[in-house]
Length: 353
Length: 270
Ligand SMILES: Nc1ncnc2c1ncn2[C@@H]1O[C@H](COP(=O)(O)OP(=O)(O)O)[C@@H](O)[C@H]1O
Ligand SMILES: [Mg+2]
Image (tube, rainbow over all chains, first blue to last red; front, side, top):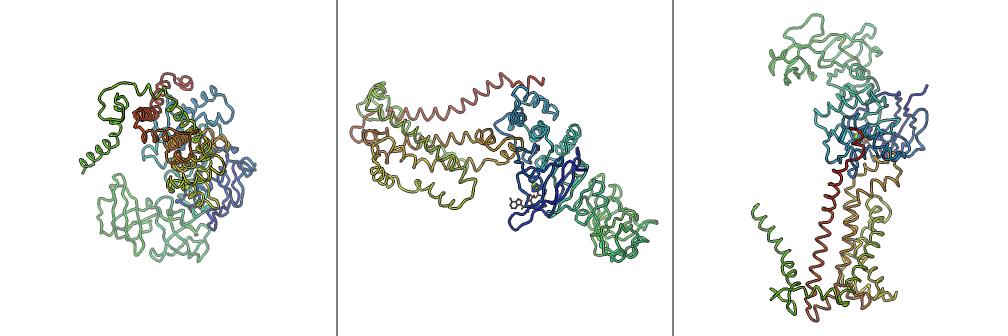
């Protein structure tokens, strides 16, 4: 059974530089997939290869089992929302949205009617006769989205579409994009370097680093069961502790700093060097050690209070650790204090690489 | 500091406007030669200009030559600018240099060159000869204006158009060209003005047949200081003002039309 979109062993070289190494991915119909990764990790390059603006050095892209390799960008029927929106400045919002229909031979009357419906769907009823420069950033974003969707594309690609918006508007647009995507059921690839955006919007997150896919999994899996140190560090805040598995069957590991820890070995073998992941929100602060939890003493360096929650950063031995706790729990603490941190054994996740 | 800048600005404006303050009244003068301030006013020299073939023929020549220069220049410059701005190719820097060359060489040197070169082709004293020479001079200016526009053109707009189903040709017709149109028009206007304004080369090669207006004015002022020259200057000034104001006026008219008849899409959605 083929997936809706298949990316097969794509390698992309620019001169001597390899931007993508054997990238493969399958996306199901209607899925919302997010490419997450730092700047320069190859997300845009992958998107441009799907869209046809870049040619892969090797590998292939298939939609519904059909290779796209022989098709020019304008023959691919793929909707794209660019970071700067790329609205045509000489056309009104309605004419921008009408453009792809015009290219497909729709008459002006019928085309503008469809365009108006689509503008309505993105919440811009009555804005059709405005020119792009007469619209706010968020409104331009909506026009770009309407334009990319009005011709019922086989895929919707969005390249960091929310990067230019301020925080409130960005959150609003995240919800909006998600709502419209669900409503239309369009298979979507969304690119971002913002991990919280990826967490909140996606059915699946594909984490890129240096031209390779590190992990492709559901947001919760990526967060709680990261495959690599890089993923653990990039998605959310993390404490990464070097350790060695001493007894995989009994769930024992030894860390130079923390001593013996109870863990779930997760397929790692006896004697294997691993990394233990403990999310900061799983760490509790106390004055004295707590029974039933793994305890360690931490020297508190910095407390950042956000009101509802607080970030406590400090050192256990020579290891930097951070805990995220409720705001009221740090009242007892001051910078420079020593305190006890503790966590449950099941909060420790073993990363093999 | 701010006040100093403002005074400086006012001085510059006065300096630029001063010739106009002198020339415009002189065109309505009733003196027998150029004289300021005019002793009295009448429209006699306007009448003289519009009734003297000695003036109208060079005016007409200039318009024809400038228009043809503009068309020929744009035919050459539009593709050349796209090639030089967007593509890398072997010999590009040489091509760049050749484009700008006529700006660096003194006109008098160019004029001597054209005189002998066009002479060999039997094109001296013909309209076509002047058009060719003026095109050489207009190309770098038109290129400078257009390439600045093209460099500022956001190419993701073209990608967007293609992703929306427009072939490269339709992308050019529907997106690239309309967005660059103001730049192309300004570039063409500069080419026109460059030719209309050009004197040195015209003096050398236009002869009796293709005599241009600046050449005729030069001859006239040398011989008799005919106040018709002030009339021509005033008319030229009026044309330039009109050319500058027309686009803004056209825009506001269009805007008014648009707000009166909203597109069908909006009516449909309400
Ligand atoms: N046209 C190009 N020529 C050379 N290198 C490029 C080109 N496009 C992208 N790259 C390089 O490929 C890498 C991946 O780029 P990109 O896909 O844009 O990353 P991302 O979108 O994840 O930030 C970067 O190191 C970038 O410098
Ligand atoms: Mg990018």
